[in-house]
Structures are given as C-alpha cells and as structure tokens.
Length: 332
Length: 261
Image (tube, rainbow over all chains, first blue to last red; front, top):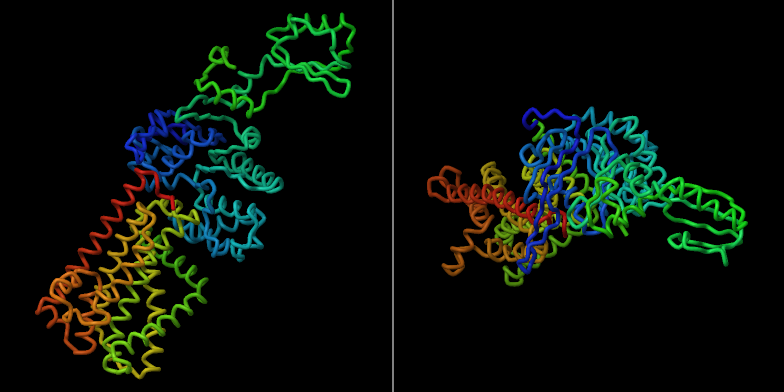
C-alpha cells in the first residue's frame, strides 16, 4: 500500500489526464486533470455523454489504459506501481462486452475467474456457490453460458467479478440491453451488494433513472472534465428548490398576465398546469391570490422534484463546473 | 505458487474450450491427413515411398505445430478481444505474459494430442516406421520453446495492429516450404538456406531427423555445434518474444487499444 495510505477512500484519483495522439498527429485530450474520490461502501454514479471520457477513466482505473498524467489509488494501492495488489481490489464488468466465456458453463466461468484473481480453489467454490444461490442461478450452474438469456449472462458476469470478493465493484452500463424485469433484478442485486455486503460500487450508465435510484453520489464528466461531483440529493436540490407546479381547474384564456409569462403553461382535458420558478413563499402566496381573484378553482400546489436526466442535460449544455447554488444562477 | 496456479488455470480453460470444438478438430485431422498424402505423392513423383514419407512426416508434424501455434495465438487473442474477455485477463494480478505462457501450454497439449492422433493413423495406414528416441523429446522441447517465442511476437503484434491474422496465416504457410518440412534446407540456394535456418523449427527439424532417422546421439550434435545453435535460437526467440510481447502490451495500453479488434 502506497505510503502506508490509510483513508476511508476506496478510490482516489488525482490530476488524472489522458492524451491520445491521432493519425493526423494532433493530440486529443480524452481526460483532463480529473480529481475524484469515492468513499468506501458508497454507490457512486459516473455519468457523461458518449465521448465524455468516462470509459477511458474507468479503463485507467482498471490498468487497461496508461494515464498521461496523474495517479489512481484503489484502497490505497497505486494502479501504476502496485498493479497486482490494485487488481485484487476490483471486480469489473465492462460495457458492451460479454466479459465471460460463452462456451463454458456458469460454474466453469466462476472457477476460472476466481483462480485468475488468485483466489484459492476452496474459496472460489464457497463464494461461487453462495453467489449462484443468491442470484437464483444455482440450478443452471452446469449450463453453457451461450444458452442463457442476456439478463442471466449479465448476472453471471457480475458473479464472476465478485467471486474473488473484491471490495470495489466497477460496472460499466450494467443494465444496457436488459428488459424491464431483468433491470429490476439487477437493481435489486446492486442494492443488496451495497447494503448487505458493504461493497463500493461504481456505476456508469446512460439510464439515468437507474443511477438516480441506486446512487448516493454522482460525478458528471463532460469533454474530459468533471463538471459536477456531489451527493445526488444535493445536486438535485441545487436545481430543484424553486420549482413548483400549480394545478388549476379550467383554462386560463383571458386571464394570463405578466406574472405568468415565465411559466410553462399546459392545458389539457379541462385542467391547466403552470410550471416554473417561484423564488420565495411571498411570491407564491401572491400568485395564488391572483389566481383566486380570477375565480379559477385551485386543485393543487406542489414543489417539483427534479430528475437527474433534466439536471444532467442542463449541466452538459452549460459545460461549466458547479459546486454551489451561485454557480447555477446563469444556467439556461 | 499463485503464478503457477494462474498459469495452470489458463491451461485448464484452454483445454475446456478446445473440447467444445472437438468436431472442428476432427475435421482438421482429416484435412491434415489428406494434405500429407498429397505432399507425399508430389515429393515421391506420383508414388508413396515409405522412406520419403518417414522423412517428410517429421518435418510435416513440426510444421503442423508451427501452424497451430502461430495462427492460434493470433486467432485466440482477437477472439478474446471480440468476446470481451481479453481485458478481464489483463486485470489479473500476475503479469499477462505469464498468463500467455499458461495459455501456450494448453495450445501445446491440444496440438500434441491432435498431431499424435494424426501421426499414429499415418504410421499405421501407410506403414511408416519411426524409431522413437528420448533424445528426440529433448530436441522437440527446445524447438517448441523457440516456436512459442515466435508466437509471442505474433501475439504482441496482434495487440497493436489487430489485422495480422492474414499475415500470421501467410507466415505459417510459408514455413511449410521454408523450414525444411518438405525439402531439405541443404537443397536451397545458399542465401535462402541461410534465411531458412534463422526461422523457428528449421534447426529443430534438422536435428529431429538426425536423432530419429540417423540415430545420432545428443552429445555428437552438441559437439558439432548444431544443438548449440538450436538452443541459442530458442533462447533468443523465447526471451525476445516475451520482451516484444511485454513491449506491445505497454504500447497498446498507451494507445488505449488493448480491447479493440
């Protein structure tokens, strides 16, 4: 372990950069001075559009791509200097790939990957059996992977990543290509891994509803830089605290005025929805008074919970890093 | 201990996967037999001469090893890159070159089973007689070390250039004519003979024929320098192959192309 490093961080990334040289001789910066920490036992969402640099970052964490600058510690082990020890800290399921051997059975795959990580045969067997029972695949242990459904193959890939009992699990697009039922099973599994087994789980996904449901903290990467790194609730609150939706019966024809010009107004089936920013309680009451004066019946007033997708799109569109509420004042 | 376990693990997996392709392997064996008989007819001028077949069988068997090792290493790595398992192997705690050696054992075992089956059928069907000598096994092992070293170079090139499958196939096929499998190297023009002798398996085939057909003991081969040459070549190929493979891995990681195909 580097410099007798004892922290509560599972992953410490400092000044990480990756510059690729392309065929034209023009260097391309895929990752630009990234600093990121993931606490032990945390479920961490790592988000970004295609080409943002997150897969390169993940691959640098896994020792598959050599960084141009910076350092990565996995449970205190330097990926560049202590490759063997660092690799024992992680189980990885990479995006869009099979990760496991389709001509082999589920059991053969588990034993192979257990041994590949240096686990003893008895430990691999014990863990393999427990994992397959937990994943409800014990009865299928002697079946060839090729014959499994996509969801079952993905569960076996996760079991293989876990068979050596690594403290950190890295999942690149774990629910990609899964149907609704398989996605639910996968989400339940990931929740159990974090809650019951205290694993640090790092998830990258374009399915932001999955990330919103599972992750405590998210970092958003854009054009090689981290533009947000916050607890999920804090991040949502930054964007969501002033948003309200007012539901009234009937339509507002002839009643629209200046106070409503910044609101999004939707009228359908005899009901009108007004959505927009109301900065303080005084303004809210004032607006409600106006509505009452017009004699339009009020149905409900509710603060809006922003969703991660909306926040993600705003952040990526504005391309600026945010740390607090002042940073988002000028957001579109 | 852990390194050995990981290497054996790789060997075991290789054997399990090879077992899945037993039907394809059987067809390959049939093809090997047909090609060998065809070569026998060509060399014998339309006749199957037992003496000539014995001579050719040693060279042909060694060429089969070359073909399996060179094409197999390239095909396996590309196949694993496509299947997505290659990157998992690179996340092993031990250096990937050791995993590759473990995999080479699996290739050696499966190739030996196939070639033994082929050889036994040929020996029985065509009444070819080869006297088995333990010295032959020593020559064989040294030759294989060099051949696998050459395979490591091809494997390294596969990680960087990806499209080396055709080149590997071409190299393997060219060896049939260049390593003395069919015609003795002594019959080549000087410049070609000199080049041929630098190739993996050429010197091994010459010495296998010396030990199995001419019954020359190892110490004589050592004294005349031919065994020293084989040992030197194999050490250079094996050591150089591992070094080049390790360099190629480093380069692929720098380029970020390790798992690409």
